[in-house]
Image (cartoon, rainbow, N blue to C red; front, side, top):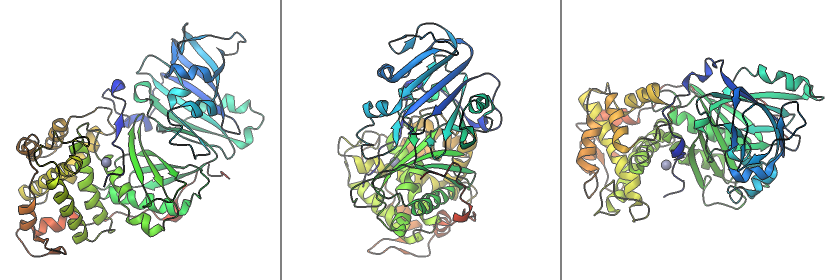
Length: 497
Ligand SMILES: [Zn+2]
């Protein structure tokens, strides 16, 4: 079943870059933005100070119509925008943005028609210099009850915004929240949300989820959603002990109409930091949420860098989704094996004349896209464990990928990602599998592997003793990781009404 969009990324602005050091120390050279959000979260006042005179532009020319009172800092003389650009080099700029108009006008409008908060992308309100390397720090000045959600990495030090805060009449009820990113990392796909929605930070192993529960006329059901996201993140930290990202933006949108499942839609957005978005029907019970695989699948995508060839990105996420639901003890091991076996069956039936690389959603090969890569993931995982006496596995390779290369702005080809995995092992199992299967018609057949692992599949799945039973059991074995209890949820700025 397909219920999510593929991950997307701003290809034009791709470059290899790691954000990993941002938390540790911000370099002294940076452009600094102070963004005052008004009480209704419909108007932004932006003050941008650059470390040298620069030419700035809006990400979208259309956004020029929402910009008001553009001028040099502390000057009454207004500056003109031409094609969304300021013609002169400037050191400090001020402008206002009528955010509600930009949101109503943007291509996101339809998707968020029922949302009471403002959802827009940075292109609609952020004027950026064209140098793409300098760090950009953004401090939001937020009135009581108003929250913001952005994909950028949190910034501890927001001292640069203190003078703006101090000058405000209501400074005692206003707070600062800082983030940092580099220009090249943002694109029109990034979500920025403003409003009186509920913000919760969910601790995960090795980091946090920064969750925005956007408001619709439907109830938010925060406790239920916290429990669900926390457990899904726990499942994914079962891959190698840590959640793959340190601070992840999660945007949850309740749908108005009754949906056939608790999470009818989810997807990963890889711009300016990893973000995951879910559309949910909060009428479903907490148990229905916990047994739904969508969040575990989407978070599994974060274990990998962006891989443009979907048979690999969707395949590895589909394999992990089932393995991690078992390690999180949502599925029994035999249920996880049954779901994998059924998926491989659907993949085998799908577009049999096509190779994994040539199958696509459009040519009727959807299930091949999802399951041929999942078969490669299983085969590679078992081979690595067999060759190394369980010392190496897909998990150990993925952990090393996280340490060396995530988060990454690079878009990998299928073979590049498999080479990266192999480079983290003492073997070449993944590139060998690629050579054997990627361009051959048919489907990587795992039935013999199931037999060797002692997984009997006639009717109900039963697990019996067999040559590779120890590997079968190791794959689904939970890791000893502490669950984050619901009492430890921090809730900064969580005084929304
Ligand atoms: Zn997916």
